[in-house]
Image (tube, rainbow, N blue to C red; front, side, top):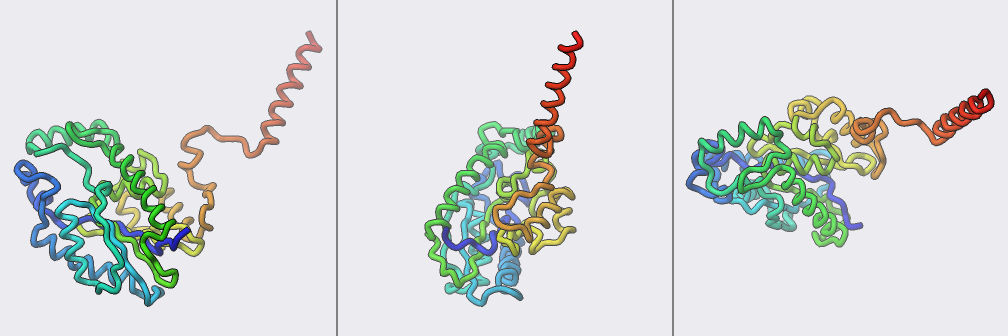
Length: 291
């Protein structure tokens, strides 16, 4: 296994023309939507904030950054602006990755039609609803799953060319829904849990950081109050806190959606099953003797 990133950081793009005025999508393809002046300033400030996270107290002085970025104009511009906070020495690479692009809402978006479509999505469910000529969140989940496989191969084969003495910070500059799907896939959240998640603000980021045992957790860097604001349930937050100290690859028996959400209460051991079967056999034998 190659050098694991100390942090995986998911960042949404800055404010775009489409965020400011949805009519922009009627004449401009989604992938060509630009940042607003406010979005540019947000991205520059995000670079400063990101630098404080990766270079703060307890960090290795030899920290490095590797970026994956969506091919959309607003994410590319966000990366360009936040890059002003880092020297060439710190940035070891960047890769445009189309699988972390925005959910496809179709081609040119007619404003009134999209309003009706999005109201329908709320009734149908955000995860499974597929936009006409576009994607569902479930489709985004599938391509993010493929990205995971490539990401792990890059790490395993050390394609990122990381020195073991350096702290690697992997930063993915993407979109709100895509980032939420990434977290869902990583932490094995259910569709129901996904439906309750709130979107990232423009240039907000979530820090998945290795805990003391090697597992990644949001609770290493973020507070319980932040996670509640993002829409995580108390059970999800408890799992994040467990991950902050859990041994790598451990199984959280207290995590309700690993087993309890799918089964009626299961017996504690095989011996419980054997005793139950023995009781049934004895009862059948007694009935046969009495008859």
